Length: 310
Image 1 (tube, rainbow, N blue to C red):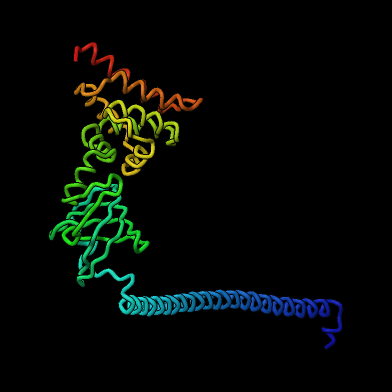
Image 2 (cartoon, one colour):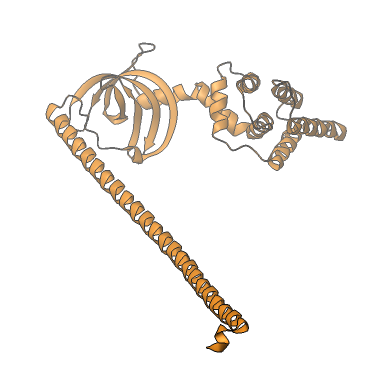
């Protein structure tokens, strides 16, 4: 006791108490830190649980809504079908389907037909024909029926009478009439262009898309060239656009091979082809490097061909 009351003893006692206090505070701080970390982990797990649950609830709600809509749609379809059967006003009994078609051609015609459906009901209607499809059991016509105000399919063997509304001609063979109409149509001309001049098509498309664009002015230039190539003034820019949209843009290697084959075959005038490509490039003020390179390659191959006497 006397030692504690002495100056040295008092300082030692204060140091011991201070160390105990610091150690206690450190212990409390460490415990608080661990508590916060644990709390953060638990909060993150809770958030994840809520997110997963909310997503599951949303997916379940979407599934139930889809089932409700599908059920409603099916009920409406069944109701409409029953009304249609009862009324017989807009009902066309036909046992074929689009899945039966094995080949088709696009043909435009405006026909008036007397048609007997699968129930033996005969109607007279005008149809704007869009396609002729070949089936294993015969042929069918697809077009817009003006009587029903909707697209319809008609088996040719059920057409008892037919008149071409454009000329007033009585059509005895619907299939032969439509095939001949297709053969003389601009669409057939474009089919021929695709088959006989596929390399020319690749060259034109590559040059037109070399800058990443395919503008109206470029299509107009190509249409003008194709009209001269196939000798048919009915070729339009819309037809050119439709043909090219069915193809992927040729690669550089594919373009070079096509140029080589065209130059070697000499089935088209290379000068006119290069002139068309130059016009395509000149539809814009700025010449893209890829366009310049394409023109230079074509001129180089033409010059080499002339030098070789090909």
